[in-house]
Image (cartoon, rainbow, N blue to C red):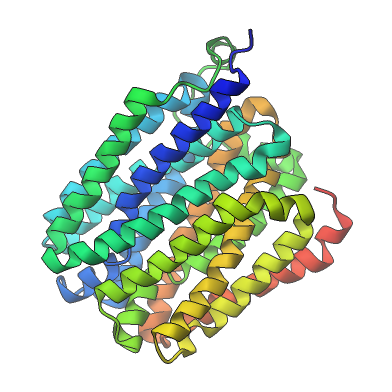
Length: 399
């Protein structure tokens, strides 16, 4: 009997989806109010807020490949459970943050805990066939979307009771996800296959992973495209809430509801429509459409007049990112050898994390010293580059 029967695969997909969803509800509660909390309560500058956002991604950049390789060797399940517990601890620390230093430590721990997304993607790769990989990867996006739907709404309600309550609420969801995974999440790797792997090396960045990308140029191109897309969006990670607060005049609840709109659109596309889209359009067409929607959304966001305008631009941006991420991740996975799925997807998440480091640093700097429009215009410009690459290069390359 195969290690994973079709029935067990379907059940495991449901469990990993619920695990990630519960965890990301905690993330969704906190992330919309983090920049305004740092600005209003701790009097931190816009550029320093970008640094706070970037430090989270820097830790992911360093530890995503390591956790991916560890999961190849010792299994996905223990990595997912431990990182969820660390994430819960980071939110508890946030609840007591009364200084820049404590907030930084909180985000360092959260970054390490959040380095499990590549492992979750590898888990999905373990339990899906290649022809259903886009739909499987879309589950992670749907979990993000639903987390950003319910999390910000809950966060907006909790904002009336104080920022420490928001921290405790986020911690509760990540702890619940850890307990859920401990009880219901099975291991996705055959124990015999794990034992055949070479000994685990505890290097943060494994050069052999980078050499693997050189040997597989199609994967390398896709990783570059993914990097540009994530960098373009990351320009606004620390500044989107600040734009709402300082330019549009939104409060924490309104900012949280904008993130909730992102969640609705993302969950609808990646959880429901992605299969229909991938069945009827080729990957190149989806990438072109997604990047075009991102350009429109990012380019117009700083020029709206009210909540209605901001919502329309956010919808355009979210449609673009929701189309792009599962398709590109699926292409990377389908072009990767089966025995290094964790390594390749972990490396890709690390490269994406590097984009999330550079993006907020530039976004915070540009917002404070050049003009509030520039983080968004920078993102639109680099996404336009990706659109041109997709139009003029991907048509000659079957990936």
